[in-house]
Image (cartoon, rainbow, N blue to C red):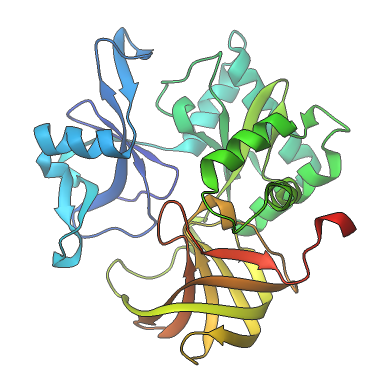
Length: 341
């Protein structure tokens, strides 16, 4: 039973989970609860109503009603969510959902926009339709035509880069538009809780990423998911030893995984300004804010938690986004100046 990031899991208990990993423990699929049955819910499907839950609501709901979806992480006192194989009713796949939509979308305005995105990336970036999909609320059929965004999935990291490059070339010259300043203000207030990035810096980084835009008035994200042959390793084969905080300067040698989950930057020309003097070879980001933050050959400064990754490929990495707020953790261009760009 295989599942990867962006898939949804529909369970025998009428729950919808979003898959959160490429690698899974024996007999389970790592996933986070997204929608639960609720007679007063804001979303509906097949005559039944559902509510979307946040992190706290999800843990409270499962703790009180469905503890079999919670388990201890590596025997530590940390609860994780996962769907046992015997609870899986169906694995919902973004690529299959897009195929369904493309075969029948005439009376649905949201679907029309998703199909238009697929056509654009196929015609302009030469990405096969089979390497695209739709996730988010559209995947389980719990969308709202008036408020839902389009979570558009591109399979294969190189395909994802081609899609973003294409968007960067044609945005504001086609049906694909840039996002308004008002949106960036709201997102900045939601994400940044310290002085690591000024608003001007945040907006500049986000606009140049070219992974988010607007099509016919609807917001869309271009999301990366590895192709099956890009998924390596086994769950639990690596252990992580925390070695305190570190501040480094370096050059990005490979940013192909910068929008993956987690985002990964291979680095060289390392200069450790603070922390243990060890040969750090990569930076991993677990927060959307610092996904796609830097590109190949750019010089950066980064602050986060130093980790030793123990496994088949033992190495040292810097982790940014160890908490939801990422306080005093960041990735920035060394010579960033908003006024000079």
